[in-house]
Image 1 (cartoon, rainbow, N blue to C red):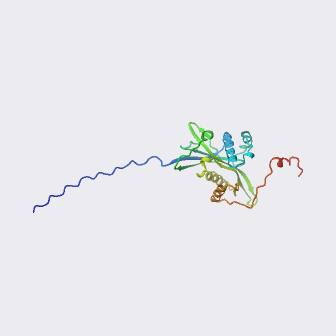
Image 2: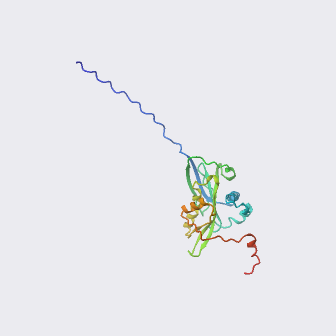
Image 3: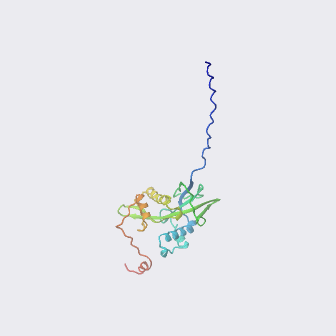
Length: 235
C-alpha cells in the first residue's frame, strides 16, 4: 500500500482585528475649585442668596441688595469675620488665580459624570479668566463664634447653597468639608449651622457627614420692629 501523502503545511491564521486603545476620557469630566470670594463677586453672591430664598420659600424675608452686601462683607481679613467660599465649575481645567489669597489655598477636585450637566443659567453666573470661562455653582458663608463649654472658637455656617442643576453631585459636601477643614487647621472646636425641619434630604446629608442634629434646641431671634424697640431701652 502506498504511503499516504503528508498533510499540507498549516496556513497562517489571520490575527484578530485589534481596535485602537481608547484615548478619550470616558464620561464627562467636571473640574471644580473652591476659592475665597472677593468684592467683585457680590453680584453673583446676591443672585445665589435670592435663589436660596426661593428654594427655602422665604422670599418674603429677602431684602438684601448688592449695595448692602458690599457695605457689610469683606471688611475684615478672611476667617476673622464673614467669609465666603465660592464653588467654581468648568468642563475644562480651571486656570490658576492671578492673585491668590495668602490666607487660603484653593481646593480643586475633578468629578466624572455619565452625562453632561445642563446649566441654563451659566451665562448669568460666569466668571472669565482671560479667554477661559468658569461657572459659579454654589457658595458657603460662615463666620467665627465661640463655645464657652469648649473654651474654643468655632465656625457658624450661615448659608450653604448649591444651584439646582448641580445638586446631589457631591458639591455641597465639598463646600462644607472645606469649612470643617479650615476649622481643624485653625484649632477650632466645632462647626455649627441650622437646617429647616422639612428639608429631610439636607438632614440626611448632614447626618451622613457626621453631624448631630439637636432637636432639643430652638432658634431665638430678635429682628425688625422687635429689635428696633430696644433702641431707647434702659437696661
